[in-house]
Length: 165
Image 1 (tube, rainbow, N blue to C red):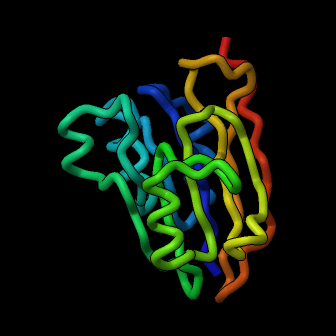
Image 2 (image 1 turned 90 degrees about the vertical axis):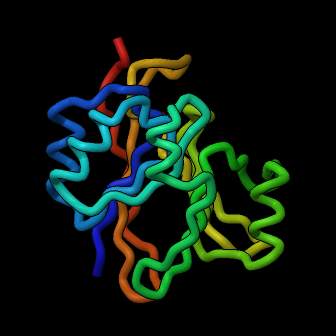
């Protein structure tokens, strides 16, 4: 059983609440737009960090994280792309990756819109944790946490961190 904290679009912002939730996870996954190496360093001090770079991330971050991250967590294949779209509205890159081999879990960020949807056509779960940072048009800062147990994704929770103001 692996406890995952999923966040995205921190845009150089991290606070004690994010770090507190990170302590409770086994792994931290970030859907891109870290914004700074400081965010990465603080998260990596706590637990193993997986992620992708986002459109605002600099060359240093892009050298540390890929554009497309495909990996297994227990028996669940995961695909992560920052600008990925969502079921019915995937980006061309996401569509290509899914058509080559659909994962069980697809994660994106970028939109700052929290989403959890099942894609019936491709038989996968799509998650976008919204934005945990303070930059952007979202009003509520959000993250997600869930458990992967063998081939099951379960106990999904939305974490509201409060207003970005």
